[in-house]
Length: 401
Image 1 (cartoon, rainbow, N blue to C red):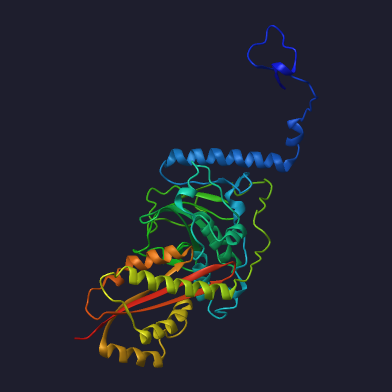
Image 2 (tube, rainbow, N blue to C red; image 1 turned 120 degrees about the vertical axis):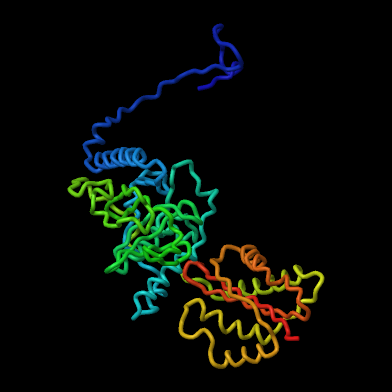
């Protein structure tokens, strides 16, 4: 207790305005050996220590390669990364589509994951201490880091019975990345969860530059191959000369229990809210385009806008022909009088400003061609838990001289 001098009679030896007095209340002895007798706790300590030594050894072999064996969950508890991997159900809305086309369904699930906004890099830097949320939390908050996106996509693929693992590596475009590796009958596929795109192992346009480690719900494998380029990597992780594994095949430790839920419960997105947002984005963009053209009049072509509004919903699901025969004939009539340029932009919804910035960067508004007209259409496709896919189609129409 800190006692002020004026509150108590001060001994001659004390100095200053206060002194400390210790009042003994009691004590408790908690034998650590009792904890160690609980096999699960003992196994947990063994596994974490094994993971620490494994990581240190891997770093000694290839200092620049990434190896992650343990992270902290959102309660601050250190756990193995393998506990994040478990088959989880995608939204029913996605399961009900493409019932007879499994590849299209996988593409749609990957697209859905790519629509979850990415956590800004600055918030994802924790001085080497990684904190990962569960897939359910990632969806309920509608945000996630690179690894959480990959884990979610991997868990969805496992739900469909795919052989899938999370791959940590590096990319030419994005630096540190987390991909999903799926094993097909005669090839391996690399999925980028932030774009929803899939690349074959030998695709020269795959942005993945280096393959560092893999993990699933049972083990972690570190790549020992000198050349870690995706095209050169031998992905058969059962070969111990190519891959160093964290847990031995005969490991008798406690079966690691997943921290993921049994299933993810999804909530419906309010359709009227989505319609209001679409109208607000469209109005805001029209005002902005006129602001960006202070010296020229901005004319809007209603006919072209009508056609674009019909096309955008079809682009989201990639179903059938994008343009009907009626729309095609409307377009042909337009092309008789105008030179039309433009393209659709698709992006996850984070805020209106992000949409404005994406449209501004196209530069379509800066046309100085005389008598230029514009067409603008916005479409928002709602998925559960307020996860939205935003489409903007901006076109400029220059009248033939």
